[in-house]
Length: 339
Image (tube, rainbow, N blue to C red; front, side, top):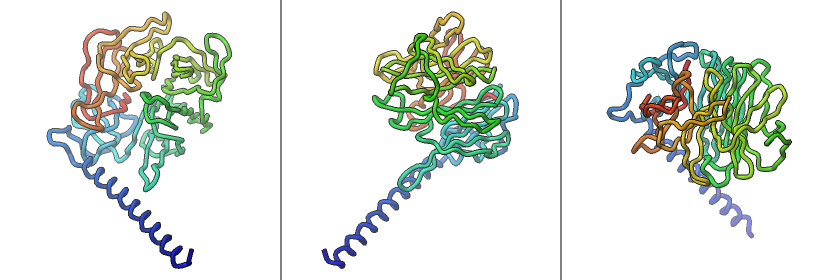
């Protein structure tokens, strides 16, 4: 091959790559522009100060179209339909407790997106940033604010995928000691030590003692609710077919999603009594693929896809005792966190 021919091939390759990069950027810009257009009849959203010490408010990620899409916002807990105040912080997943917040972000790039976890103080200042091994999925903060956890997909894109792998990390916010993966913990399955190459964890929820936690363990095409100990670095299985657990404020019950058909992406919301392991189905009849949040000891909230709005979701609430019916809490919202 002559030098001239090699030069022509090199120039052609550079131009193709440049064109590809430009196309990706233009597509992303066009999509962002569409999402930043406020929707007629949508909720009232205004820029303002949001802090994690504002008691009596409900924080969430704004999923409504407009310039504040994906921004951390808040409304009065007693009047969630009121106009929402949006911060400048944007996240894909969020949670907060005791003045500590965790924000999982996906920052688009020309060829690859960058995923990171931001540990936040009460004024939304970033205390530490941690690179993520995959796409954000779940996030939680312990009641004391001393521990933070997140789950990401390292392969596959959802829990409905035939093949997916997750990684769940736990951070001690006092020492900044990070456990990169719960898979380093010892597992007791049905009372016996268990080892397998297909173990996955997701959906951690913390108790108030800063040691006990609950999570989902997946192995051999089964899911289990596990109770873990941070100090002993162990988890023990309790019951099968439990995903995305959420511990009630009184520490006595677990809200979770239960798969209704093997292999199908259909889940029903239940509440499990930890003393009896009796599960009560909740009044929500739609499939819910979310880690529910307890608004108080009697009510849970969760995200559901918005009807007719691609890529958007609404927050719904339902009584935790199986009575009543679902109630639209906040339209165009996700990742609720009662402050």
